[in-house]
Length: 194
Image (tube, rainbow, N blue to C red; front, side):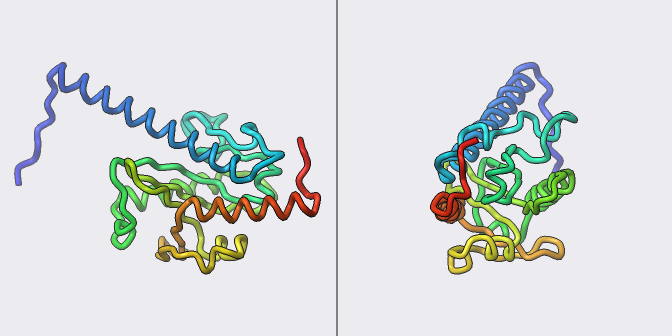
């Protein structure tokens, strides 16, 4: 098979730039969607300031370690930090034989976690979606099972990346567990307005 030649005409270059900008906007919108979903699931007293996207996370030295900045009080009930990836296509079957790109996503979330400085434990969270598809999230299987009583029985996909065993579930399932955990925290008086 012959190698494709890159079309360097001005029209082709302009089209590549437009496509790149659309992809960047799509990624930004997806990060915002995830932040809003997390805050909505946590409920009161949490606000947008408790979970927001970090523009160009990793792109400058003042950026946070993850795509989303999560406040300490939200981290107390949602101990995850992660990367949000909105792809043109994503199917869960891709995890059976991950591409180099999928493996790099895992490495990126683990590298972001390594940059995170805190006394409280933080677990990786990789959130992935294809155009018009369901939103999936993955983390260490044991972390999901330990923190969310309802998740061990939740259907998911268990796989290995490096030496760790990961579990991929629908993001809505994880957010349902967050909703329940936040409700219990409100009932016992742990959550208070900032």
